[in-house]
Image (cartoon, rainbow, N blue to C red; front, side, top):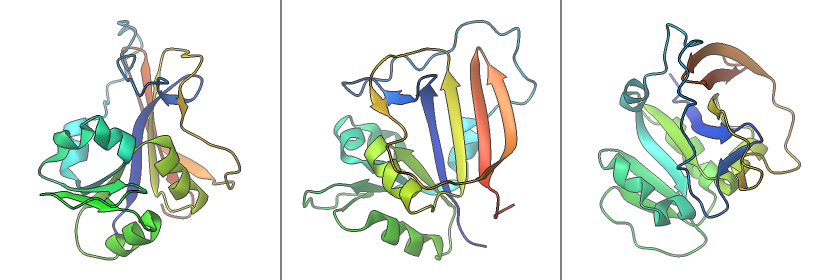
Length: 177
């Protein structure tokens, strides 16, 4: 079975994935559990189902790759860097490389972020699942998830959960099911 490319990240209600300086300390619930659903997204279980993590250079510069020492990590960058341990720097067509990885045996592929990296995957329409946590905050400005001129991509809501005001929506492309 073909490995899936799964986008899993949090956004503010106004569509930002990070503050202007790349901060994410705002990714917290509102403390109200009165609307919590019984089912919850188990992030550790999600991580068990993946063996490749893909992120942009800004995420790497913030040491976000450190959380994935037991996974193969691809860093999309325009710079030439030397691979180190489990970290592989890609300055070429990251979408093509990940599509090649999809055809190999293994677990799913976690598209971690950021926005510029995710944009290339959206424009190439190669994301199989979107797991989006909507954080109860209006940031007003920051780094957006969606850039302009994207194709229309029809999705199917597969699952949802609410925990402490954070709504998590899990979508798949309509043609995958």
